[in-house]
Length: 290
Image (cartoon, rainbow, N blue to C red; front, side):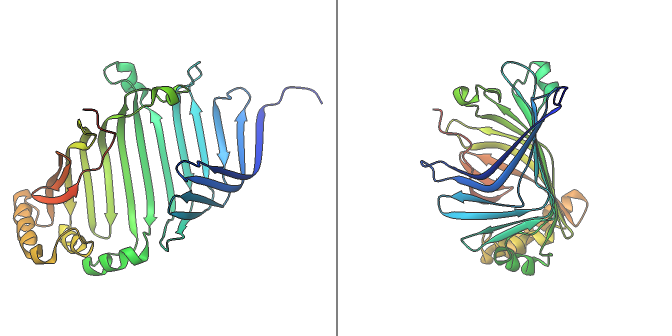
């Protein structure tokens, strides 16, 4: 045999990875990894049709068709991240706690925003993208909400595009520099569920206590579906439903479209509100800094 190989192949069988401290683990019957010899910084992985994710309180069995992942770094000594893409055909997740979820297609990615980084004013910026088609959340959790709001049991589209700015780059030194979220800008989002459509744009960043703080402008078409869905989900108390309906109808009149409302999602002082409606605690993005 002569010549030089044009591809590196790695086949692993019986994988079992587990963090004894957190109890988080992953197992799969096999994993195939491929890299071209002339660009070893670009790795493609083929994952098995079934794998198990272990969490401290449950196991999740993931069944997926055509599950693939791609990792690409920039050719430099720091091995800076260029892009990671994970794509799947139809998949289902089943938990030992009894819930299930699935979708007909999913694609998620994170990529270095080279244009922003090159500008110099926003270093360590990365574009996050997620698209789910025909999302079917757990029926036990969704049946009541869908029935009360007159919505289908599948969410046709979930799309999210955002730019995350970190405190340090994602490279081979990330374990030492510990990149944390410095800001998140939501540039494109859509939830299309029956005739209910929600879009959002805005920015958030951690405050001194690490809670998300900022403002996201949200538009809701066919907003009349929203209130019964929130009541069924327990977000709005039934006794104030009529008050909320009246308030949203008044807001719709301001837009000039009787089926459309626009409201800000405000995150401030560790709390979240949707316009005048309090929704609860804001998520914590990082540990307290002050």
